[in-house]
Image (cartoon, rainbow, N blue to C red; front, side, top):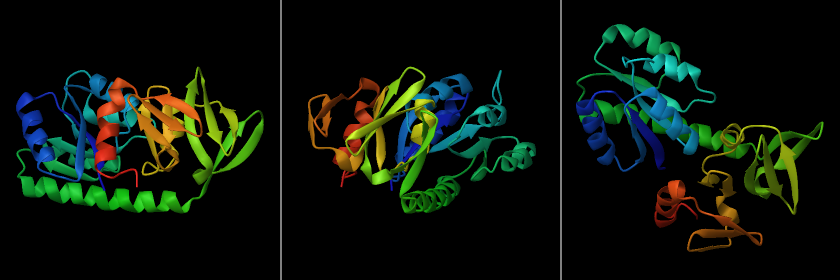
Length: 233
């Protein structure tokens, strides 16, 4: 299992150490390195981030306040030089709390704990074979394996499934977070696709059920890595 993660820390030395640790961990895929909460917020909104390595003591907005502000937040491992923040960190259901400076072995222990939880969550989501969408004053029951792709349309998301489509009043990221992350991938700021529904990939286009969908530059690297790692099987 490959876990998408980001590093959020205002100290350059800490970011460098974490970046090296992540690089030495084959189960992690680093999608962003951020100096503050505001940069992190942008990365999270544009990527399927599953795990944050988050410093607590940062200027303007602390790591804990930032994490509490997120809707459907990814899992978090807090990193800090201040042990007095530990209790507050665990109050937001942190996976772990790493006290700087920490060795790679301690980092790996926290990562393994996160992966175990994510695997369990992924299995549970996969067992949920349908999802409920509210559209046109009705509740629609849609089988997850029948969904082809999602398209953001203003304040709505158009869900294409089983030769039909419905308009759901929700944010694109919120709706995507409700779907199993091992079955769907975001390939464009306005599109996410069902991995197993891909017919062909040619250049910067993916074809699904006769529809050609562009691969956005921001998402191309992650998507191509998924293909090369066999994630489409």
